[in-house]
Length: 204
Picture (tube, rainbow, N blue to C red):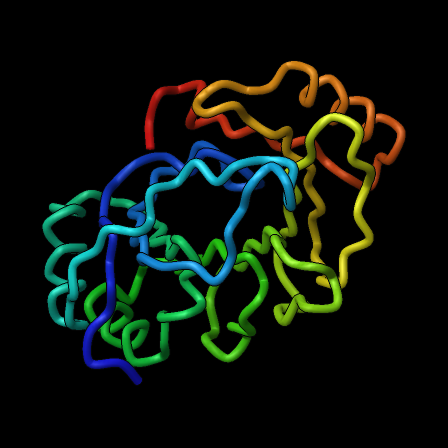
């Protein structure tokens, strides 16, 4: 249980990828990550600024979420990062659930931390570690970023939905990677294509 949390930002936007793409959501972005995604090891560079932070109590986070919502009838609150599994705990979820009992709660995690005991409504795992190191082994969706030439993975995490997403170059989609991923999905129809649409829309 943490007294304070390192939070990068709390903002309102549209879910940009995965099965829930296009849904309005409040995002709570935690600072810090236990992975360093670079081309040499992962085939792509991390494009998220998750280093800067403010120390916030549970009450601070609830208040900030309230200010962002401002009476919006928004169904989802999404915990992202960085790696949110390093900080998100039951006490924070209980505080938010007490304030917003009708909301649904989702996490976007790299799978290196088991968050099963948090009773979230939606778990999205995007592994950035070797499969044997994945600790979240059940999810609603599992997503892999793929650059040109990378094959279909063999996930340890069992999910209802399996998605492939093409690598990006900053805010632009790598067209070669996109065409490669399209062919991967066409030849492996148990997988779906997911594109980071928020980059096309120009939103966070």
